[in-house]
Amino acid sequence: MNISDRSDTQRAAQLRRATPVLVVVLVTVALCIGHLAGVRAVQREVPDAHSTVATVLAVTAAPQPGGPVRSTVRAHWTGPDGRPHVGPLVLGGRPAPGETRSIWTDRQGDPMAPPTEGNGPALTAAALVLLIGGGLLLRARIVTSRRAGREIGAEWAALEPGWSGRGTA
Image (tube, rainbow, N blue to C red; front, side, top):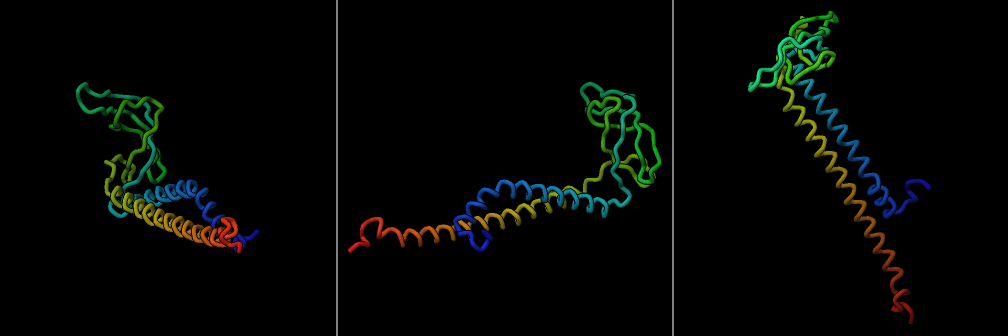
C-alpha cells in the first residue's frame, strides 16, 4: 500500500500516533538550535570567551558560614590554545577533588566570569522553533482530522439509508 492508497482516516490516526515522537523531536531540535544561538551570541559579544572543563585538584578554602556557597579550589584546565593550566578558581557549591566543572577562559586560558549575553538569543531561538514547529504540527492534526471527518461523513451518508431502512422502498 503506498501513501496515495491510504484514507484520510488512516492518515489522521497515523499522525495521532506519531505526535508524541514528533513533539520529542521538535523539543530536541529547539534545544539544539537554542544552544547554538546562545553560543553564537556569546562569540559575537565576547569573542575572547571560551568554555572549557576544569578538574578540581584540591579545595583550598571552604565556603564561609552564612555567606554565599562558594569554594576556592586548585584546579586543572586546558586553555583554548591547548596548553594545560593549573591555578585557583572560585566555584559555586562544595566541589570535591576529582569533580569537573565548566568554566570560561579568555584567549590566554585565564579564568573569567561567564558571559550572560547568550541567554536571550538562546531562549528566543528555542521559543521560535517550538512555536513554528508546534503550529505546523497542530495545523497538520487539524487538517487531517477534518478530512477524516468529511470522509466518515460521506461514508455514513452512503450507508445510513440502507442501515436505517429509509433507503428501501
